[in-house]
Each structure stands twice: as C-alpha cells, then as structure tokens.
Image 1: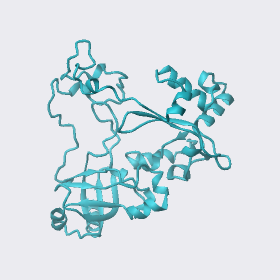
Image 2: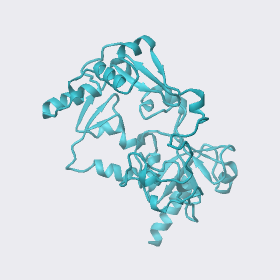
Image 3: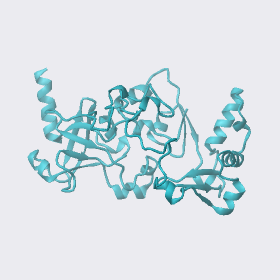
Image 4: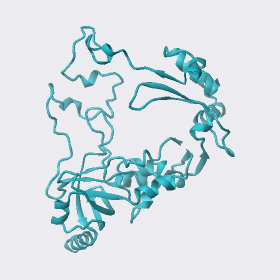
Amino acid sequence: MIQNTNPVSVAPDQEHVKRGFGREDLFVCVHEQFLTETAKIADVVLPATMFLEHDDIYQGGGHQHILLSPKLIEPPGQCRSNHEVICALATRLGAKHAGFRMTARELIDWTLQNSGWGTLKELETARWIDCQPDFDTSHYLRGFAWGDGKFRFKPDWPNVPFPSPWFAGPVDRMPKMPDHWNIIEDTDEKHPFRLVTSPARNFLNSSFTETATSRKRECRPEVMIHPTDAAALDIADGSQVALGNSRGEVRLHARLFAGVRRGVLIAESIWPNAAFADERGINTLIGGDPIPPYGGAAFHDNRVWIRSFHAAIYKRNADHVLQ
C-alpha cells in the first residue's frame, strides 16, 4: 500500500527497485493524485484528494509555523483522503485505535491540544501559529538544551533519540571528536566525476512533473558540466551524453555551465524515468546503502563517468568484444 510517494521514480538504486516491483508475488495498491510511474505498475489505484479537498495541518518547512489547511471544495468522483482510506481499511481489518474513530478535524484538534498549541477553533481564528522561540532561546544566549547548558562537541550517535541501528550506517567508525570523516563515494580512474542530483527549480517533487507548465519550464533532463571538463571529453553544449557507474547507465543532454566546479556534475531532478531516452532515470546511478551517521540515501554523493553518447556506445561495444 503506497501513499504520498512515487518509488519507481524517486527511490535510489532504481534497477533493484524496478525488479522488486516486477515480482510475480507482489500485490501493489497505490493511493495517488496522478497516474505516476508507480501507479502505472500497480494492481489497484485509488484516487486521492488534493490539499484543497480535505482538512489538514502543516508544519512549515524552513520556518517555524503551524498552518491550517481547511477543506475548501468537495473532491471529484471517488477521491478520498489518506485519513479516510486508512480508517476504512482499519474498519474492514478490525483494527482498533482512537484515531480511526476521529474525523480529520477531530484529529487536528486532539493533536493541537496534546502538543500544547491550543485548539482547532483557536487556530481557525488565528490562521497560523508562530512557534519561533524568543530571541535569547533561539540564539542560545542562555545556553543549550542540556542540564548544564553546555554544547556537546563529541557526537554520541548510538544514544541519540529514536536510534535506528538497522539504518544508521557504521557509526562505530565515526571520529570521537569533530573532524572530516571520509565516508563519501570517492572518485577513481574509472569514475572521475562526482554527481549531484539537486532538486529542479520547478519540480518540488514528482507530482510537479505531472503539470504541463513545470515540464515546459524545465524542458528536458540535463546534466551541468564545466566547459573545461566538457572540452576535454569533446562534449558540446546540448549534445546527448551518457552517465554511468556500477549501478547502471542513463542518457540525457549536456549543459555547459561555468558555475559548477570542475569534476562535479549536477543533474537537476526529478524527471520521470520516461523522460529519459532509455527510460532510466537519474536515480539509476544513486546508491541505496544507508549512509552514516543516521541513514538515508546519498543522493548527492555518487561517483560516475560521463561520455558523449556515441563515445559511450563505442566503449560499450569495445568492452563486449574484450569479454
């Protein structure tokens, strides 16, 4: 059961992900607003509401506010919110929890009251809550959030809140005191470039790739390369190139840009796999191993090679002959 994500596009190590979804014994239900690449391979697709079609509450990203997003219009057809779908499943499965018996508005009100931020009625009146601490607290003028108020330089990752030993990575090898920890995927002779997959300006997430205006502004999947690096590889601006490593190979177009560091490639994403010439998206090249100290995928820390597309074909054929 998949809600609020599109793993066939956004997950790392795409070749493994696609093989996993292709299993005969896997039944997939996707609850979605768009027919994403994950929804297209699902056995069942349930239509989801958009943010104007259900009551919700948000914590602001990049600022400290609580925002109310009230339902303004009725959803079309059979669209249902996440909360409605989960509660309906709970009823059919006989699962018991107080939250399953609450409406979305009741759940918002309960959450506000139990976290010390008033009531839903108060939030509706104020429209948002400013959660920013006072100046002295937010600037640590009275110390840090320890009993003695002192700052801790020495990391203690095994004892952080919500430890995740299965996904945290090799925290036992972390330096005891602050220092550079060489855990990046280093370049080598075969993979002389570092790949960064930054978000594109018009693609906040893969839902935005479903809108015609965003796709028109981004035009096509491209990789930025320094002009000096491009000249050494006989890569022209706008030409088709191949990027690869041990995880796979993708095709896209080069954009010469003097603002990128030499030895670094930037492929702004996330374009759907189908937007690429061979339908392999940029996350084909991204590793899925959990990175230290606290897990997650290294979307901006991968080594690759880059070649003009014709040079890549020649190299692939030559390797095949040698084998």
